[in-house]
Image (cartoon, rainbow, N blue to C red; front, side, top):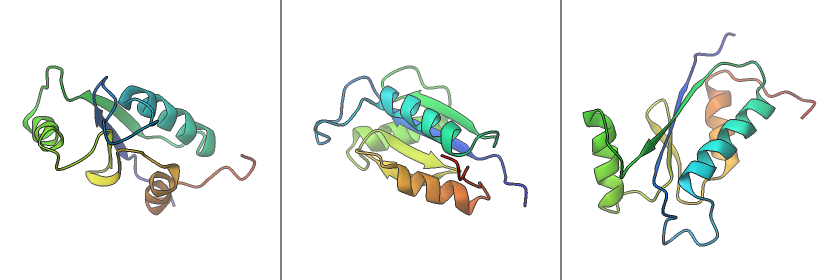
Length: 111
């Protein structure tokens, strides 16, 4: 089965979440997730984007998520796959990998 090309989005800011002691920054989480996904699921296409909630935001949907994070509805970094929240605050790989595999991704068993 050919997987659909998922959209992975990481919302965050340069400032580390106050409730997320010892967690990496949002940008570090973005880079870490991208590297982990590429390693576990080589040659399986996906799109990934980082949205700085304190920077200029180009569309209403992203602004809505940024506002919800700033109003403490979500912790950041907030990770979505195809519009579904799969992690927030201290992000872990298992829920991200589970979501990707639910979309048809097949892990490289040599990793």
